[in-house]
Image (tube, rainbow, N blue to C red; front, side, top):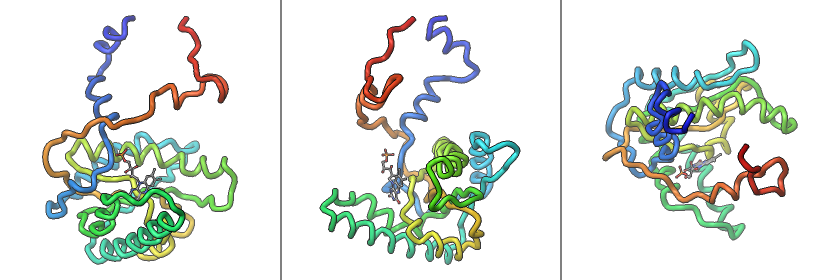
Length: 224
Ligand SMILES: Cc1cc2nc3c(=O)[nH]c(=O)nc-3n(C[C@H](O)[C@H](O)[C@H](O)COP(=O)(O)O)c2cc1C
């Protein structure tokens, strides 16, 4: 079947799906801190997200800690900023790239986001091998990405962040997250201001990121 005919036969609009996949990205400057977010919208997005969560066997090890309480958001904001300062300091000392101002902007304002979501997974893999780590986080990261997509299609912006994990234990204590559970990321969530006009970004040509059959081979096989 021709690609266009195949697309017509799909039970969804592929162009729209591709558009969401290619233009969903971090939103920081356009977060509307003053517009409330209804809990039902978050529930709907998480319900969608866990459809994409692969779990080992019958395991249902996913958890989403949704923080709306102002005092807890403020405390997480403090910890995030402490992590950010350390991270920025290390980057400067190591002669690395300076942090982009937009990263600092989010750090300064994290607590103002009406909702913070921490996708978590049951299990800990610190000090374990690659298989255990990939096996653990592989169960939650697809759901986390789906959550970003679902939030976006409802007018909500977020960013993939992990700076708070420098203070993961304190965040866990603050939110009563058991020490048998790992935090995967933290999504600051708020409605985005303006239109949904997010665009594709500059990425390397696909030939630079694909390895065909072996690492050294960058040429695709000839089509059958
Ligand atoms: C594992 C991981 C952790 C990250 N942690 C943070 C973070 O804590 N704070 C932040 O502002 N950006 C963080 N980023 C960067 C962004 O979320 C994002 O990847 C980057 O801004 C590029 O976004 P874009 O391609 O969507 O524009 C992190 C990215 C990754 C992959």
